[in-house]
Amino acid sequence: MRLVIGIDPDHAEHMAVEARHHRGVSIAAAPDAMGRLCATLPADQAVACFTALDGQARGLRADGDARTINQLMADTLVERLTGQTRAADVAAEIGLLMRPETLFADEDTPAVLAGYGPIPPGIARTITGHTKVVGTPPVHPTRRRRRPTRWW
Image 1 (tube, rainbow, N blue to C red):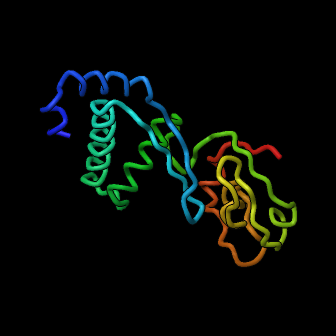
Image 2 (tube, one colour; image 1 turned 180 degrees about the vertical axis):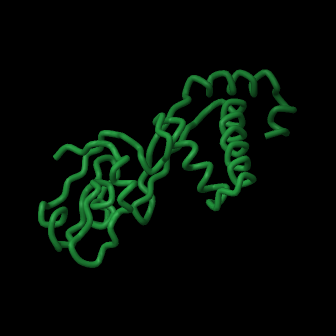
């Protein structure tokens, strides 16, 4: 990049200005019921966002939080974007398609999360606040009370 800028700085600047018009956000499915939120930003804004998340995470670690820096950065991102106090309490309308037998009984048919695809039934039950009768550990009671209302 440095070489290209050195050879034709005017063209490099023009391309950088044009690229700013193509900023955006996208989502992609990742393995194991995870997702990637990708923001294509002007470099200065991307660095500012990363620096803010990193600073917050390092402050929380210094205060004794046991999560990793990456976990803290991810949770801080979710909290800041959604306005929630805790990432685990995120209140969002999502589309989740699953059989009633999977939600309320002992069936293990995968659910489908809109915008993502198939997810394991235990993860779907966690999202809804329900647990399987046998085999899946229950959601901690205090977390269940603080989660938003769910509609079926």
